[in-house]
Length: 505
Image (cartoon, rainbow, N blue to C red; front, side):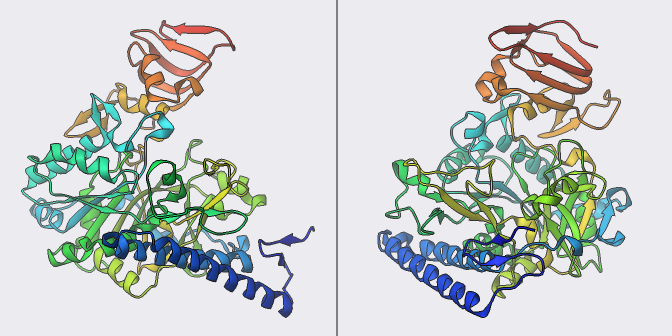
């Protein structure tokens, strides 16, 4: 077995321990690194406008806490012990079909205790768009944000309730989003926004911030990043919205990604949480894995707690085991229900202990962060679901696949733009003419990566009611009235162009 050396030069591995002199050296190194970063943060704060200083100070306090934990984890070799992983107990994951239906006379009362929160910090750059991803048109010229507002307004009108919509923006999306929200002024939806923290990217070699001042203008914006959706706990608390909702009698939030078109308010789940005697502070929706979900986080039982296991925590030799459905049959949809009073408690007691996601060139080959001058940088993030172990009586709900319909790539848009779905009050509903309730697996080549290129390659969206699997590679366009059935594989050789017109069965 080859020895393994951590980022501080300590030799670690199964059955190996550090000498006291090595541990003392690493402790001194960590203290030096922490002092150097703290000094740089103080210098950056000195360049901040006075009216932004309080916010910047809170952001930097959060970053410094995360950075110190990163140093400790790097030195200790902290990782999941694969041998300790156990499947969740049977009562830890409840089948959705076992939920009781909500009584009609309780619906308004329960909805008035709910807050819907959407994660709205992402840009649409990976799909070739500028501005917030939430304003990409995805169905009938309606955007993710349009559909979300329609869904909440429908609830409020139908049941005479007041479910507010809250958007967690990042510094990348906040200004544009707040301008767009003006068009919903007459809608029957109370909309709030709050700003996610911004943390400095750090040089991979020196572990110091690459930013020279606090500014975001021009290329300086690349020196900063929003630290993942695990930041919601502190940012929601610091915004004052959490206390405001508690004063209003709100009890739970339903959190999801704004691009997940299946993440609508579910009355039966809400009924479970609000009925007498319920103690669940944290509920995570999970669903069964398919071949398209091999990298999604999963729930495990670890050291007597229900925990979320992400692929980044998996030892290299066990990655294939993690990706298979033999041992890990479910994955996290990131549709999460949390008790507001419990969020307040864990933040004020500083009880949150979320695993750190380290994104940098060596450890995360699929995510490369570099500044414009080519300096390799690191950013430290956390995921909202990893806090499940910090809440009392956490629970997983194995929900239907229909509650997980994200749009991460343009190929996902083909599903929601097609006749596979109809739209009702902003909600996508699978056509009753679909024989199987699962969605087709669609893999489109790089020619379809950008929204503009994707749209121009379809004279009309194909009929996919009977489609099981579609793979397209090369310079392919689709004519009008195409019907795709079963398994379809279309390949255009390099340098050739192909137009697909006929029905395929």
